[in-house]
Length: 143
Image (cartoon, rainbow, N blue to C red; front, side, top):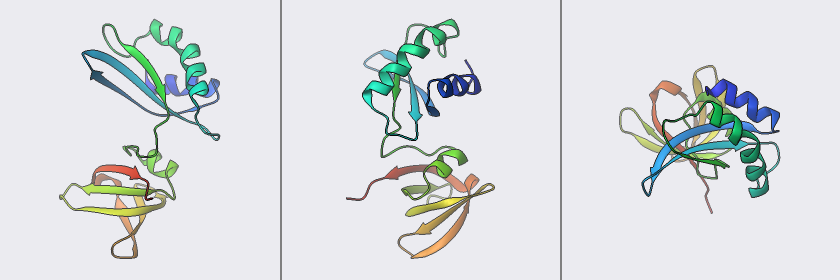
């Protein structure tokens, strides 16, 4: 099942697709779907979505062989791998690693085209960063 079809299916469940990943834990293949919504994502919401989409996904499996389906919130410390992730995370704090190896922390101010608008916490200034310059990005929570 492609991401657009999955996204539409999840919208019918009242949630939005944030991301997916396939991983192996303890020799078991897991297909994980991260969801968001206007209200908090609860365990009950994840269970409900799993029950609705599981039989549909089984008709067009996302991975070969046996796998386990997990539906989850992306969490407080989530990977940002698309412009949409940055737009969704406006106002959040982010740790960035750039393609040139530099690392820094910032607050996400928004997205403008293919650029990420940030407030650099160390330099105390607004910066504009091309999305293509980012190697890794992950939100974090400051206590």
